[in-house]
Image (cartoon, rainbow over all chains, first blue to last red; front, side):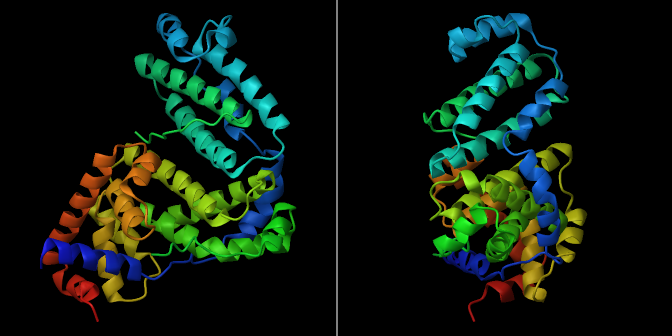
Length: 161
Length: 190
């Protein structure tokens, strides 16, 4: 079989796979969980900040923050944790102001909160330079998210590595 | 090519779901249950994990739907949400351990597959690395371009292209060796 023909048949075979459904509908579980989920609406990831390891490398922080974040907003901060906390407050404020979002804003919010959850998950176990890199990414992501709520949407690339 | 997420829904129905009307939300759920679950299953090759993603996706969608102004493309937003949740889970799982061949077979055997040909084909798919399988599915079934795949995965365009080639080559090998009879049948045009 030639490669081209194989590719075409592979595509056809993939498309021909029947749609799947869960063995049991998830609707009742979703309907039950919805009231609680709505109470926790918006940025549940941000509540994790206090529980995430607070060990930061001040030196690396001082070197990296000026280059990557608007200095005025983090001028008083002494660690990435503090930067995160400042930005979280701003994000929370902006999200409360933005009662409705455009489709682009909405999807950016989804992407960025997913990214923050991933970073926070990694921060549970990261140490040293790796932890500092993650804290920096966390602050940068919060910075972008705050701007999304303000209507300033920049292209966002999500890394799953 | 039409994605299963590309569905025309009455805007009235979506508005009712946005306002929190439970029956409208259930209707929306029923419309997208299969597309969301199928995509999650293709990324994760694990029915339990796919169901978790379905639940996470729908919960997130319903809790945040009210803030959405543009409702015409709700299907594609759900697709994006599904991919975010599925990829996060894939990443977490692959960090913990590589999916062994035995596990892949076991997981696929749990699936609700229509017949033996599909079972064999799904087994071959499940043996691919998660990202490779995801690239194949997004490219061939969801109609993503390599640029869109690269953006979604946070990788380069060349990564997407190479994964597509490797995935195809790997499946080709699997077809020709391990389960050739069933898979040749699955792939042969009727």
